[in-house]
Image (cartoon, rainbow, N blue to C red; front, side):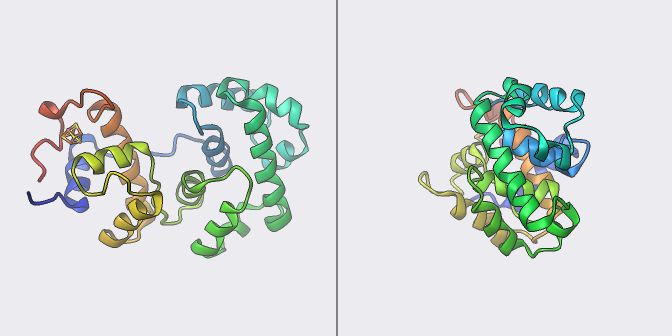
Length: 214
Ligand code: SF4
C-alpha cells in the first residue's frame, strides 16, 4: 500500500478544518504556564487554573516568581497534580530568571537546538512540554509530538508502533519545511482530527477527512 505523505495529510486537514488559531492564550508567558499545567490533564482543567491565576493577577513572570509555592499550588489546584506542577512552574521560573532575567525576548534570541537542550535540563520539562514552549511561545520550528500524533501516524503506518518521540519528530522535520507557522498549524490540526475522528476506540474512518488518503 502506498503510504500517505505528511504534506498531503496537512493539505487535506487544512482544507477540511481551516486554521485552528493555536495556542489558546493571551500571550507567550501564558502559553508556557499552560504547557506545564497541561501535563497529564484535560485542557478544560488547565483553563480553570489559568483563570484563577488571571483573577489573582499572577499571569506575570515577575509576580509568579515571587509567589510562595504553596499559594501557587492552591491557585492551580483545578489542573490536578497541583503540588508537582507548582514545583515545576517554580523550577522553570528559577531557570528563566537565572538565564534570561524573566525576559522572553532574551530567551527567544537563543538558537533552537541550544535552547531546547536548556529547557530539557529543567526538572519536570520533557520533550513535549519543551517543544510546546519553543513552538507556541517562542515561534521556533520544533514540532510537538503527542499521543494523538502517534495514534494517527501509527494507524496510517507512517511510523512503527514502538516509534519514540525523536523518531516521530524527525519524520516531520525531514518531510516538511522547518517553518514554525506550518508546525503550529499542523500539530493543532492533528489534535482536532484525533478529537473529532481518530478516537482512541472506534475511530470514525467512514466520515474522516483522511479516509481516502493512501
Ligand atoms: S479516523 Fe481513520 S481515516 Fe481518520 S485519521 Fe484515524 S485511522 Fe485515519
